[in-house]
Image (cartoon, rainbow, N blue to C red):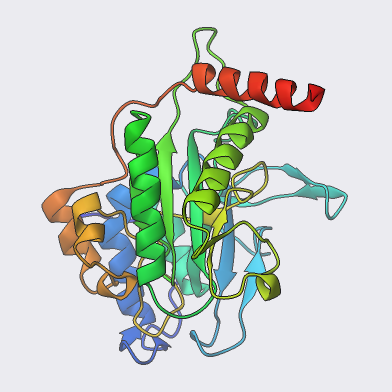
Length: 308
């Protein structure tokens, strides 16, 4: 598949090693982005991104950036968004072209994080996500928790897909549908659901699951981060690279792959393009689901508990 940039992009220091251990230069990173652009852009183009930039490669100084850098080309699209933290409008980048991807790569933006809603409907998440985050090294506990979550969601008849974080964890996504009135689920409604599922997992697997947000209090357990699903919260975008020694990529998996021993280190900028050409985008797990019946039951249960 041949992909061309829509605008000329100035490239500086193309031979700079961004991932030294993996042998990935800036030019090779740019080629990776071109190769995965048809799939990556589908998950970026309607959502402002949070960048993490590594001007001197993964072992150098890095920083988060939500505002578009000064001197951005006129064809780079930005949107005004109110920042409660800063008390003013910021202008994050909206990645809607191959040229923008290459421009970001030239800025050594190695990670692209996105929220759960689109620009058109910022208070309506298009998916639910559970972020499974290990506290200590080792992937097997994460796999066990992910498979338990799979069993719960499968029992509820909800389509869902696991995605490696590209680092040490797994994120499990459920696509959401619009309701009859054209509206979608609110974050308040989805929080009822995610909190209930996370609490169930903690009760089912107390040996390895924690809901403790402070890392120093988690021991060696896997943190089921249901709070990360919310307004202004972000997760690494599907097919974004990560700043790891292996040049890993946040990659959707099949459940059989995860059960069969897949680990995040297997999926890198070297092999994800060929994987995508072969099997396509596994994030597309079917039409979104409606949670009114489930959230209605949870609301009733919460009201009953409050009366006791």
